[in-house]
Length: 280
Image (tube, rainbow, N blue to C red):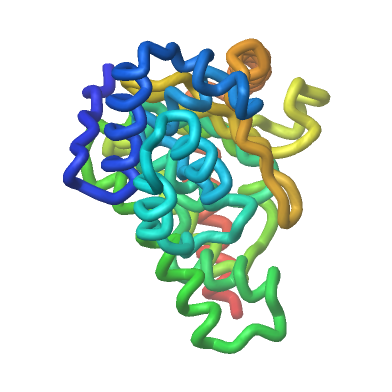
């Protein structure tokens, strides 16, 4: 079981905002649902703000100042959060990811960002933005590699990844880049740092054919689901909706190869890429 992550109000402006929001809400005698309802926010969303899982937006801060008679505290400190280094559609998901105790993901096309090598990430971003400057690509790659620092802890968070076989077969950056990228994934699995499965082509149709799915669980906040699309994403917190996507993920896992068979396939495909690279 993953170790709970404690929220330290002194660790960041967002943690401070969350702790203060909880303090002022409780002092006002309001439940999370009570505070959220007039603002058209769910109680679970308020809980995620309080635990530092989600980023408070400026318009929300202004409403909290009014509702809790905070005299501009939330607006002032929300400004201190600054702009995220991640694209707008992914910023909240990336920040929540850093606080998760469990991350489960189905990847239909690409190796997940947390597992990407520098060369693979660079090739991905270059395909996304073929006219971007090298310095712009460097910044994107650096932000992606920084996300992977959460894997420095040997056990926390629990990371369970299901790769579609297309992830293995689609050459991103050429055979040498692919070989190194798959070897990296295999190494993490061999170190027992991640659980990895492959959903093979011969599994046929499955429950997540609509796109990528990430589930994130927290020690002190409701779970989140993130749906990944082309230049877009949805971060969902409704408990019933998240539960439905948890079932979707479970069905994908049931159709996937075992971790041992998946590791063997990943290593085999990596070896094929290595042979191809040597021939060129």
